[in-house]
Length: 463
Image (cartoon, rainbow, N blue to C red; front, side):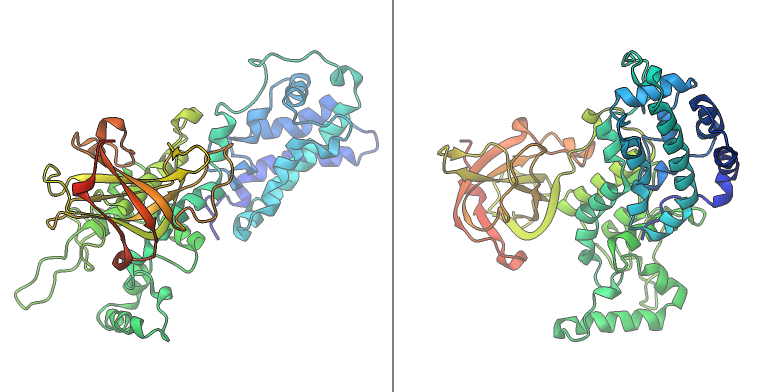
């Protein structure tokens, strides 16, 4: 499981010691006042230079101290006004529930690392909230203005976007789903010895172990048995980079991440004896597996989308919900193909294909597409790509269980004549890039490129 932040218990020692003073005060006989509890147990959290247990579930955008003000009265009123305190049942206050969210973390390592901090924070807030809730002056105090309340600078949507669980989900859809492009050299656990079609893969793995030392073979095992283990490995490897080499994940320059550039690189040069030079992880990058992913295809787009989003989340660069990427597609193995691409489409130009469904009730095509793919025009004047299916937008009815089950579809083609994808590879082209559309009737979407649904570019019409 992923342990994004390795905060040792010693790093929180000063805070925990201060909180323990409050625990001792609770056992001393006379119950301390809300102010005394605040000074003894809440202010140490506020003053601590160390992050709170929020980092267990969030990569950025929120910290428990964001909800604390120097005044104990205003802190309580602020939490009350935001619905984070249950005056009648203080033990059920939402702020306590949020602190305890880490108890449900599937990452056992992170759960254990943050357990003492989380328990101390919970005990401190629970005692203080209970005492404050019994004070009529605090219960009935006038509301604070929005500006006076304590809360994170980032809006709730940004805070949710920075949750580790969402980052992992995005990784699964954008990167993990494309891992078989790296089969079998970087995905040995995907090999099935009982599958006759995997015999060549078994031979490849055996040859790698014969030619390379064990340490290098182990480093090549980039895609692990689970997405969580894979992401953890990528993060750890990116912290341990040899001088001159690029990291697997580059937070400063996401498009210079090795996990993106390697599969887009060619074989090393051949030596006089016919063998290849060692593959390079320093520019110019070379890849012993050769080209596995092309610039501007759908996998490149999804890799860049995740890498840039991850760097922005970790860097706390999203200031508003409007800044967030859509990131609402799910990879499929259904393939769409355009044959006989129009002569006006230069070889190598990026093309995006969108799939729309027929609305029987409205007797019209649905405006929003259900899926898309991206590819470039090949020398054989074809465009191919596996479809990414769009998830329903927030507030919309649940999408069909399988929107590509079959039926009547409209394929719309958008061509990047303006080369806008050069600057923003994650962009979805719009009306100014629309070339034409063609209906695909009685479509049966099957998996794999050999079973691709195909339309002719010669039949694309403006409307």
